[in-house]
Length: 147
Image (cartoon, rainbow, N blue to C red; front, side, top):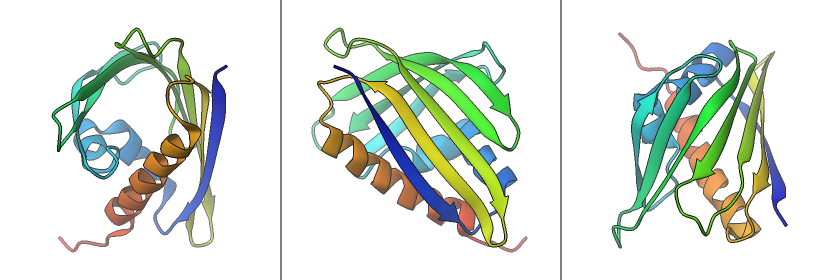
């Protein structure tokens, strides 16, 4: 039975910067793949109804996992929602990811919800992967690099 995971994080960065990290393909391949993986964005049509395709490759084994989906909501800079369907027939169903961003005194209050995660992905691994990815996201968006 598919399940839902939820994450909450406060980032020391404005919502616009966090939003950009979720919508810029070059940024996504830097922070979204969890530790031990590389990422590639095959294409991204960044508009509601637009399609995207992405993959993660296990750096040690070379095993690749790919998926595609569509953007359902792009409400800059407050909300992003997209679907994902794996190319692997052993990963059935559709995942719906919703990112909500809210400006707060110190930066951005962020929630990430993934609904419909297929059973073959152990919940602990899903949580662990997102924890690693969100730590990388913080390093990207919280950095204040001059010039």
